[in-house]
Image (cartoon, rainbow, N blue to C red; front, side, top):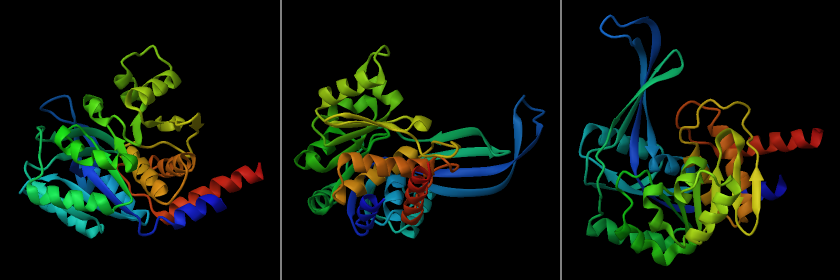
Length: 316
């Protein structure tokens, strides 16, 4: 714990630039007591509604809750969802530069009896570009930050033009990619993706996870970290290392990848090895998947989680 605790203590004040697709997560929560007479679907009687920051914004929220400073560059609309999103970003202490170049992406989840019944997406998917003011600001901030996270949800924020601006900073770029943009991410420092994305990007379902991870590492000339939900994660660096999950129960994996990206960024910014960064990120993911919906893990609870798990090992 001592070595990891020293790394966690250095999280405070580390500056991380987050670039990607930000979205507003809306939740309508209620109970289901009957089926609609209009169609064979349940009626959810809504008792509560709330909003959370989603997509790349959730990466930024996790960075701030873990003690770092997050500067978010993304795209929103001049609409009510964009207004709510900006309020949430400000409330959560996230610095942001948002280009009003599209309608705001919104994911509306409807939960009945503690289960997700339906998700309704509003999104404008097309290539988006920052104006000169935000491009200049992005370059200036990229020079100054400790780590850069590219959070790609394939909604149009990540383009070849944008990645070309970041090429000179490859050695401090962590990418959470989508397979459709795979070719953009050659020679980045670290690729963090889930198992499904790994197999899509390596193009052969017959490969084992180890074979696919090594293939992607070779294709992109980058280190690779594969998240595997309840099965933990596997790191492909100079060697292959598997990390079991530290979740007590898996309730919801929504946003867990964002938590992993944030913890990785801050650990690497704090001078950790890749193995240490993966261990810390794995602990953080274990907290996230025990919660419903997107969740920003706090630095204090991450320290407590690591201490609790380490004490269990000692007791054994």
